[in-house]
Structures are given as structure tokens and as C-alpha cells.
Image 1: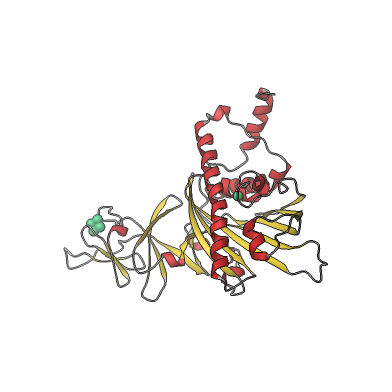
Image 2: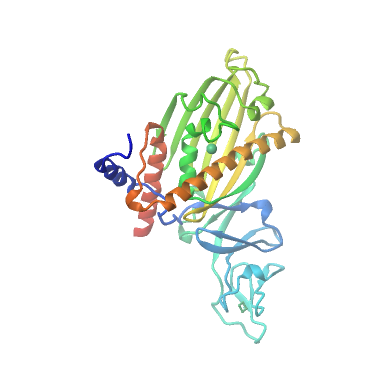
Length: 364
Ligand code: FES
Ligand SMILES: [Fe+2]
């Protein structure tokens, strides 16, 4: 078998038209992670989100401020200026802006022009992350932010990290919704050969997509085996739920236990990982990750061990998705076709949903 017949390729291309991809304009009306709270201190931080250049700082009363990063005088980035109390002074001619984005001082004259300033964006600090709403301000409803209670709960021991992804956030969501790839892309890290063949179920709802996989019995890779003590061959159950919760949040929840012990006697070990992609552009993504566990708390060595092992694996995703992006970018549209299989069902539904969100936003 080589290249499929033209009518089969045409059908695949036609189906792809209904899916969000690297060409789909970004969806603005959504909460996305702007930064970890710890990144925003009493200095100016420049970051491009959803194609817009922003500058962040923390006020003297600890609020996070997000401003457009372009001085309306002569377009110098405000991030190249200085933070003074709760104001930003442009580094070119010294115009001063307050935390509402209003210009409040022009050094070369006694009065400041009225109604001149920069755009501000609503932010919301929750647990370790700062969320931002960059769409229509009147739609910035806090209830649209999916709850992530475990990220604020002391029962969960957490670590966090950031990766720069040279690919579309849509492909990262797709990657997370089909963990079949653990057996291959992560063969050298936290994947095991039995993972791809394990039974799975799909859950497809309105804006909520999940893939649930039960790998029982299995042999855990060191990242899970060592902290749980489930080190024996074929000793463990690995119950995985991988869920798209919003365009800005995908959550993976896993429970491990000894599959040879009766249900009432066996301890269960839970981990959660919040994967939070924020598009920098259509083909570059800020990838924020928070990982938590509900066992072996208060043990920094275990936290460090798991964090380091996990980030080796997440780097494999980032490297793989960058290669995929390069292949997509290098393929002329008329030659590009992709086929889906049943494990792709949640990801295909998710990509349809993302496209529908973008199309709806373009109409409103
Ligand atoms: S460019 Fe900012 S003050 Fe002139
Ligand atoms: Fe992965």
C-alpha cells in the first residue's frame, strides 16, 4: 500500500476542514494561564499571549496587573521602562501610566492629555497560576474558569514547570487526549508497552472531552513505582482519566494501586497534572504544568525526583509536537491528509469544538 486513492485523500481532507488546526484563528473569549504567580513580582515582565504583547507587574498591594506593552506615544515597549510604585514609566520620553493603563504624567508639559492610555486585561490569581481574559471584557465571567480545587488544597503536594512549545496549542490538546502515545513517544520515560493496547472509553460532551484508560495489571515506570512502592512486575493498576476542561486547561488524573490486594485493604495513590496551554501565536504555545500527588507529602526529595522524571517525558511531547509542526508546515495543503482511528474520537470532537468556538466568536 502506498498513497491512498485520490477520492480517499479528498474525503480525509474534507473531514479535516471541520477541525481546528494550526491555521485556525485564536479563540480570545477564554481564561488562559498568563504566568505562574511567582513569576510576577515587583518588576516588569514582558510576555506575548494570543498574539498580543503584554507587560505584567505586581502592585504594592500584590495585585497582578496586565497592560498592553506598547507606549501610545512612540510605541516603545513599556516593559523596557521602569516600575515606580504602582505606575510604569516609559523608558523613552518618560510618560507615566497607572495600573488602570491611564497616562497620568507627561514630563515635557504641565498637563497630561485626557483619555490617553493603554489597554488593561482582567487577571485572576488562583493557587499557583495567574489566569487572564483577553477577549470581550464584558464576557470575563469567573464561572467560565473550570474549578481546580486540588491546585489550592494542602493535601496535594505540588510542583510546577514551564515549557516553550513550537507548535499549535490544538495539537497539544490532541496529544493529551490520546495517551496511546505513551507506549511510543514516551517509551524511554513513563510509557509502558501495554499502554497503547489497554482498554479505553471515550466521553464526549459539549466542550468536555475525556479518554479513560485502565491499564491492569501493569508494571509501573520508576517515576510512579518508586514513590508508591508498587515496584513489582505486573503489580499495579494504572487508572487514567485524561480530560479537556477548557481551551486553557487539560487535566490528567491517575490512580495507582496494588491490583493483587482486595479493594478494601489496598492503599490508593493519586496524581493529578494540570496541562495549561496558552497560545503565544497559532503555532507557538506557552505550556504551563502543575503536578500534584496525595501521597508521600512533605518529602522534597520525592517531589524533585518525580518532577525531574516527568519533565523528561513532557519534553518528549514538546520535541515531538515541534517535529509534527515542522512536517505540517512543510507539506503543501493539497498534499496534506491525515486519517483518524477510534482512539482519536475525543480529540477529533475537541478539535471540532475549538473550530466552532472560533467561528462563533468571528460571527458575534
Ligand atoms: S514612546 Fe513612551 S514616552 Fe515616548
Ligand atoms: Fe505525552
